[in-house]
Amino acid sequence: MTEPPAVDRGPEAEADPIVAVGTIRRPHGVRGELAATLSADQAESLAACPDILVERAGRWEPFELQAVRGTTEKAILQLAGIDDRDAAAALRGATIGLRRSQLPAVEEGEILHADLVGARLLDAGGGQLGVVVEVLGYPGGDVLVVEQGTGRGLVAWAVVEADPEVLAREGTLSCDPGQVAWEGAGR
Image (tube, rainbow, N blue to C red):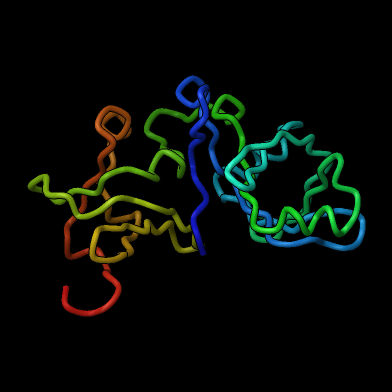
């Protein structure tokens, strides 16, 4: 699965970036409804927003969210102007986004998944282990997907040291290198 971009690259990106909150999987039924997977930490935010953004072909398009139901893994959305199965099928694989200002404020010590994507993962000595490219939400805890030039690795969020202030200021997290499960052998 290709990770959607987490932050808008448009001119207003720094003032109010777009945060990816889900992916449209497929049409649902014949009336334009969409089956989607939503980020666990942003599902409630989406339901509270009348206007959302959908990225396809590298461009964000605004849509009015008319209805959302289901769970984060199996959400069903209805967007204004998407009235039949063909229109819904054209959005297959598209990223769902919200402006950062549409998200609820985080409490002290909290970190959004979107803030982790792009962070550098360091060892205790400051050596770079990789860059976080995705956050996978599992019932047992979140897992960070870390990428470096030679491959990908997985690390449980529970073993990562994350100071929200350091993350915001320096864009870094840290963990013991032995906690990263790298794909393939030879590590």
